[in-house]
Every structure is written in structure tokens, then in C-alpha cells.
Amino acid sequence: MVTIYALEGCPYCETVSDRLDEADVDYECEWVPALHSGRDEIKRISGQRAVPVLVDEDRGVTMAESENILEYVDRTLA
Picture 1 (tube, one colour):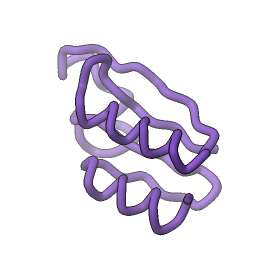
Picture 2 (tube, one colour):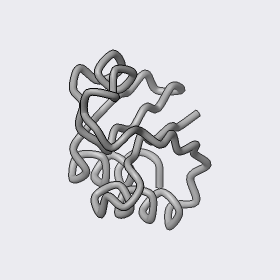
Picture 3 (cartoon, helix red, strand yellow):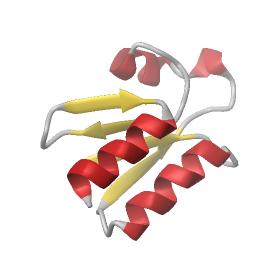
Picture 4 (tube, one colour):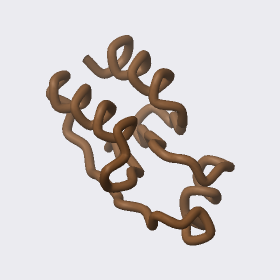
């Protein structure tokens, strides 16, 4: 199971979602609050409050930073 934590309207989040769609990866999108102070779940999962964050439960991978996520999708999930 792949989950993406994203903020509506975030261009980096949209890029990651688009790449997952292009790679035909089944994933869930969890929308996070706009205010960083409301992102406790993201902080608990990834150690930071920034998005996007990808969680690949099957492989035990949690990562942030859109460029890293895009590379992971291309290398591992595509």
C-alpha cells in the first residue's frame, strides 16, 4: 500500500501524484491541513511537517522531498 500525504494546490504534491498515475501505481492520498501546526500526523510519520510525504508500507519506506519521491517512483514502483 502506497500513501501520499499532500496539500491541496501544492505543485510538488501534484507532480508526485501525476508521476504515480503515470506509473500506474495504486495509492491513497491523505490531505493535510494548510497550517503546519495542524500536521501532527505527518510529523509523527516522517519527522517533519512538510509535504509531500510518501509511505510505501509494503517496502517499509517513508520519504519526503518531491525529487526523492519521483526518483523512488521511477526506480522502484514504475
